[in-house]
Structure formats: structure tokens, C-alpha cells
Length: 198
Image (cartoon, rainbow, N blue to C red; front, top):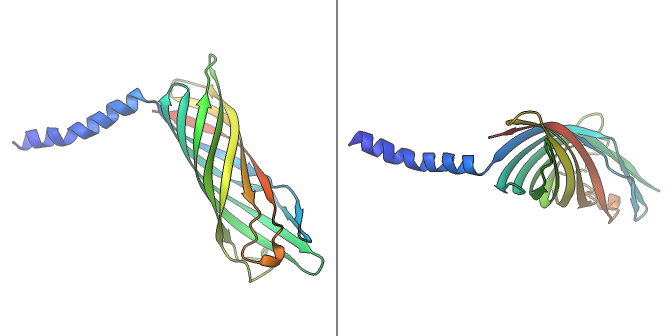
């Protein structure tokens, strides 16, 4: 009887495993750069240093050409705000959680793809010498994502993945209204890494 209960308990796991083999999945880890434009509005000029971070992606293939993807990104950069009467510099740690639809094609070992989706940025202030104000607060911003790239098949299980990600967000001013440019802009995020298929 115990064996029967054990095997019945294993059935859902076996079903999930079989489904996973039928529908291709992958996980990738990439290094990502974060490049933000200079943004001007409301007598405020916002600029940023280049951010460097990590990007983790989980892709679930609905069929050979269509997939859903969940992403997590971590990066750091310093944002600078300048007005005619004040300025501030904020060392920021940000994390991204996002979901995308991915459309891909296959051509021999090359698999180009495009993607679009939505997500959230979580901004946190790092209190160190790169931050010049005590008034900055952490917060969240909504993003719209778009991008594309190419995966090169190294083996049946591994790909080299190079991609561009663009995030459209409204200026985040860390709760300090005097630094609000009231502008939308694109954060450019090129990434390179490896994907493992299972």
C-alpha cells in the first residue's frame, strides 16, 4: 500500500517532467550594461553613469517560435540632477522584475528573436560618498520593455545569447519633486550571456 501511495504521489511530478520535455525551457545568465540618456525638463537636467549588472531570464517555449519569459535584473549606477538653484547625486541600486512575450526564428545554429513586455523597476538609494543628499527615497517605476537579439547554438543544451533590451520609463526622481523632469525616456541595456536549455 505504501508503494502504491508513493507511486501515485510521483505521478504529478512525472507529468510535469514530461510536459517540460515536450515544451522547451531555458534559463540564461547575462552581464548587462545600463545606459541612460541625458533628460531635460522643468529646469532639471538628469544624467547617469553607466550601470553594470546581472540579468537572469527564464524562457518557457509555448511552441518552437513563441515563448513567455520572466526576467530579473540587478544593477548599480549614479544619477545626477542639476537645476538652476540645486543639484544632487544619488548612488542607486535597482532591480527589475519583468515579463515578456518572445518571438523567435531558427536558421541553422542562429536563432534571432524579438521581445516585448512590461515590468517594474525597484530603485534603492545607497548611502555612501556617491550620494550627496539625505532626502532621496526608494521607490518603484513601471516600465515597458522591447528588444531583440540572437542566440547562437553552441550545443543542443547551450546557447550564446546577445541581446538589446530597451526600457521605457517615466523619470524617477526619488521622491524629490524639485528634480522631476516629467519626461519619459529609454534605458538602453545591451546584454551578453549563456542560456541553458532543459
